[in-house]
Image 1 (cartoon, rainbow, N blue to C red):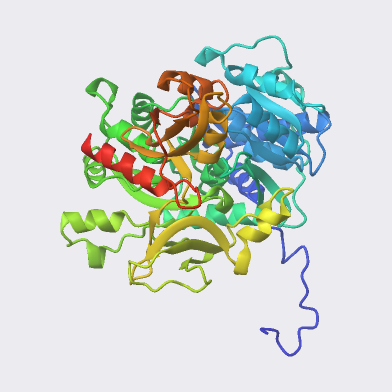
Image 2 (cartoon, rainbow, N blue to C red; image 1 turned 180 degrees about the horizontal axis):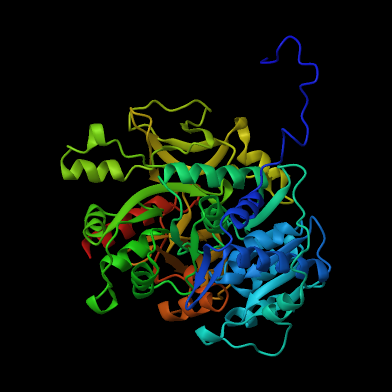
Length: 545
C-alpha cells in the first residue's frame, strides 16, 4: 500500500533518513544562536555555545565514570542547571536518563535505583542523605556525584566527588553518540504506582522529538520564548519542555523552589513568557499576598494539568496577566497529549458559567497523537453524549515503549492497540473528552500520584489496625489528600495522631493521611470495602466545611 510501481533506487540512506532525536535540537541551536541566552539560574546565565559545551562535558564525564551506551544514569535533583543539562548530556553519551522524584522515601528511591540499574546518580546536596541511605541498601550501588548549590544554602558535604569539579576536567569536544534508531531508549521515568511499587516507563527518542514539535504548535509558540521550569523535571522530564526549547532558540529559566513570590520575581525580572504547573501553583499565584507579587507588562501563557481550575481561579489568573490552557496526560505519554483547544468562533459569546464548563474539559488530541477516545468495557467507543462513561485510551507517537522489565503490565496497558489510561471520562458531541473520575483508587495530591493501596499497606502494619481504607479527600491547597478510615482490633486503641505519625515514618510526607476516621467500614455482602461510600462521605464533608 502506498508503494509506486517502480521504486528502484528509492532507498533509505543517511541523506534522506535520520533518526529523530531531541539531541538534534541543541546541536542546531548552538550552531545558529551560539551567543543567545539558553539557560538562566539566579544571577548566572549561559549562552547556547556554553550550554552545549557543558552538556558535552557532562557526557564525557559520565563516559569517564564507566557509563556505556544503554546504561542508566539517575538524578535526584530539583530544577537546577545540572538537571537541565542532564536532559541532553546523559543521552549524548548513549545512556538513558532516569530522573527520580525528590519527594520519595528511602525505600522507593532504593527500589528505583535497583530496578533501573543506575550506574551513576547525580544528587543535590539537599537530598544527599536520602540518596546515601537508599544506596546503602543496594548490593550494587551507583557511583554518587554530588551537586551542591551554595547560593541556595547547600554547600558540598565533602563526602563525594563534586559535579562542577568533574565537569571542569571533562573533554569539551567529545563527539556525541547519536541514536542509530529513533526507537532507542531515551529516558526511564517511574510512575507513582497504583499498587505499592512504581512502574518504569520507557521513552524513545522519536516520541520526545515529536512531543517537542507538537507542543510548539499547540502552545502557539514563536521564536525565543522564555520558559520557567515550574513543573519538576522528574515529572515526565518536565513535559519535555527542556528538550523543546532549543527548537525555538528559547531560554530555560531554572526554578529551584516553587513559591508564588519566586514565580512572580522570575516573570518580572527574567521576562518569562511560559510555564506549566499543577492547579496548586495557580491557586498560590492568585492567593499570593501583595508583598509576594510583582508587576509585569506581558501576558504569560500557562499550561495546567490535573483537576480543572475553578472558574473563579481562571478569572483571577486572567486579571493577573496569565492565560491558562488546560491539558491532560500521563507519565506514559511524555506528559500532556490532550489539550483544551479553545474555539473562539463558537464559545467566546457563551455565558461565563458555560465558558467555565467548556474550559473544564480535557479536550482533544495533540498533533503528534493519532487518536484519543473513550472506550466502554466491551472495547467499543462510548457514544458522544457527554453522559456515558468509559476509559480514556490513546495511541500515537507520544506513547511510551512500555514498562521496563514488566511485559505483563505493558501488554495489559496496550490491550486492543491503544494505551489504556485507567482514567474514566465521557465524550462530548464535538469529540472533546472530559474526565468523570480518576482511576478508582488514585489520589492526586499537589500533582503527585498517591497509591491508596500503598498507604493502606503501611497502616495495616500497625498492631491496632484490623481493616482500613484510604480515599481522596478534596483539599483547597493540594487538590486532594489521603483520608484514612480505620477499624481497630477488638480491645485495641490508637489515636489519629499516632497512626499519621506511624505512616509518616514509613512513606513520603505527601502520602501520609491527613485525617483518620475510626469506625466500622461499609462493606458488600462478600466483605469488600465500599470505597465509593467513603469517597461520597469525605466529599460531602468537604462541601459542608
